[in-house]
Image (cartoon, rainbow over all chains, first blue to last red; front, side):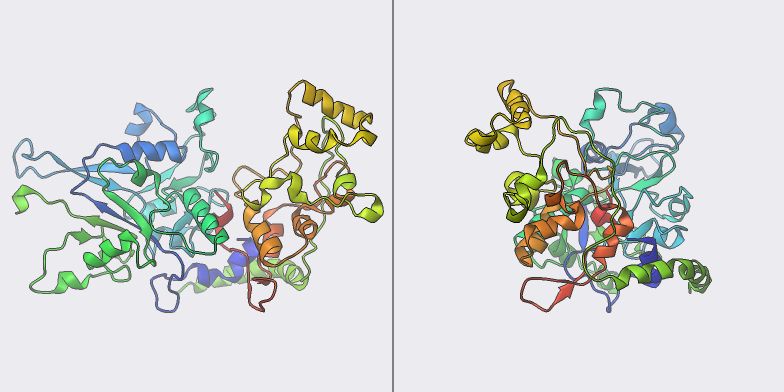
Length: 284
Length: 201
């Protein structure tokens, strides 16, 4: 996208996405995470570090909030006033929700974060000037800023560790914002392969790194437009509609207990990640 | 809602738009030339001799005979020494030429020839040869040398390949915003992707 194009089609890039006039035609990447299966093992987080060249910042910088875990496991304790919760912590893997109407996109002064045709919330490092407005406006706090030039000043990957960097992902320098990309490098390859064969990407053909390593298969990822995709079936089963900020199932009086929900959807961000609530003994 | 933005956009746009319309007006796919630096190679490989027209003494070898991955991979690939020797062991007439002697030196030493990269894109760019070759050569039926030439220039007239096109983002976009026929017969057209993450990684 050139700057002329950005300026000429500004209103298009700022288009509110879940809309009748601009549906996703081929792809709409979405995810669902089953919190009942999640054991909080952090494998997804580790896989993300490996796949996306995330710097390990160390204990001190982590304490300052400078960590770069695009995929992080949040812990919630439901201890009802007791010192320790009977059933331990509840885990919630938190990553960029790839909102259809993303708060981060509207505040970027340089248009570095945009919505792609595939329904991804893209971050272009070259355009980013590091204003960090996007991070301030993100309700999920899943954007991470490069406060240091980790590869050089911090020597995050001392030789020969730089050899393990993923060549398909940029190594970010100082002063840019970064976040989960839904492993766009894998999506691009899958889309290209499918295009050569004159078809769309099949369900299960492409996996995100976190999904690939999840030992309990808690993460499902796929194309929401594809009627055969498992992720779409899950969304439908849970009656979660991408384009609604209030789900019809929650409004019903005699609501059937369905587990699917999206985090902070009342903010009208229209997130692309659906969570399946954990079933706890105390809740039954 | 974004009227305050529109105003500033308009002002900046005024300056930029003149340039953009100039780009749009140029419909044929020949694009701006911007000669790159001379790249010093281990020894001279005469592209003109291999790929050039028969009238100019060339062999008219298809680009993809040597750069065989172009149609099925993101990179076009530099051929292994084996590929050169595969033909040249049977071509006695040039066997004593200095370049071919050099070639067989590498072959006998079982060493790869350290060719230097001529068309080097920045690390943050994801360029896919396969997509372009599939579109222009296999779908539209354009001659291979023409399709490769959109980005690589007139290689069949060069000896050592030299970058001829700017390979900048604006230059890529100048082609991506043109309407390209989707195949050889159809009148339907489509444009190249206009999405940051298609090319930026």
